[in-house]
Length: 176
Image 1: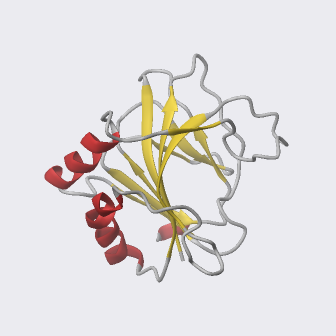
Image 2 (image 1 turned 60 degrees about the horizontal axis):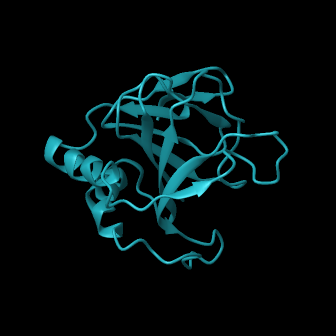
């Protein structure tokens, strides 16, 4: 990864991409509301929330599932196999899809790291919109469907939610 950031366009072939996208954007995908974006302790005075579908969430030390694995976890197999070709991970920490409702004003959410130890983050974008992932150095990766960004998980990043589409859909993957 050059500069610890790699962007890959058209990551999955069209058929595999549409299989994932069509599920995530359908009523079959069960969403849970989270009333904070980055820090649940309220330190950011964060008033916005978003929806998640957790495919897998493992304890960072034991790698035992903290929550039941999604019955739709198998849908991630082609995506994860292709990611494994790129980063050769040993363990999955978390695979979670996020749905960000449109906001009236575009502003960065709080900067954060997903875990406070070395790990790799992959963000897979499912629809094109004017939202993005922003890094502390102000580098932005725009939401472009079927695009994957891979970066060092210790790089602080944040979401910038869209104003042009009714929802922004991503899949956030954390591995070690």
